Image (cartoon, rainbow, N blue to C red):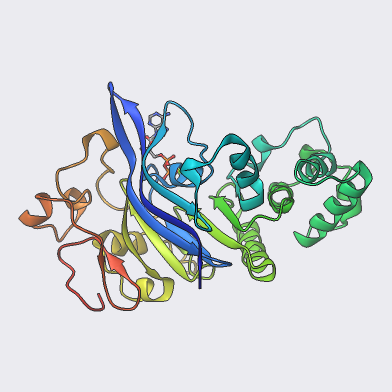
Length: 324
Ligand SMILES: Nc1ncnc2c1ncn2[C@@H]1O[C@H](COP(=O)(O)OP(=O)(O)OP(=O)(O)O)[C@@H](O)[C@H]1O
Ligand SMILES: [Mg+2]
């Protein structure tokens, strides 16, 4: 299958203490047409900046300082402003954790989605509202016609996120980037929204990049996973294989920190030690200071992300070839 998105050696930097510091540091990944993929890692590892870079929306003073982002073969980093405008929305759309802040509180949600439709298509207000109602049905909002007239505060958190998904779908994107789309919602609503995203991806043939710190939501959602730590991909591969036998000690630690649903202990088990800040990463593997298996050679140079069997890759010198 062809890649809809191909990211190579992406670097995003922020000026910290007077010098540019990479917070996304040579990231490679791809997403195939229609494929649901997950990007996972702890807070601060660079997930959101990676997502924003795909739309060239890294907030200043941050900037993309290296690499390549190809969307259906076209270099996003070389796009003119008009090309970028159609790229944002028509090619790639993004939704975020806080649907509240992205909606205008004084306008009805129907109006807002209709305007999003009119930004990409020459249709009348009436036609745009009809399309909005259709989209509300598609995202399983109950009584779509009535919802059009609601203001954001009249909806629940889950309903607002459905409105945001409808708005993202308005321009028919080939790739939807969902950045922690369910973090602000309660657990049952979380799984409804994830199921909705998965079924939309399948029915519309739309690729999906789910960004999350929560490995628990990845399993039933995506086929492939990328695990990120301190600005780098440390492991990638098919979800089932990575879950069954994690290759990188960081992935293993993350999996062990997932709370088990039925053991009555909902506290999040965290990984001991702290994530080093981007301006003071250790010389070798960034995980070495927290890694129970670290040896001297781990502290000498940053390991390569090495391909393994079965479409997997692991950035760890302790993992040999073949299946981890
Ligand atoms: N305006 C800024 N100035 C300096 N550093 C920044 C700025 N914005 C973000 N960063 C740094 O960039 C790094 C990556 O941030 P990013 O938001 O991509 O992380 P994340 O993986 O999305 O985390 P979270 O799970 O908390 O959303 C962080 O270490 C953060 O400190
Ligand atoms: Mg984030």
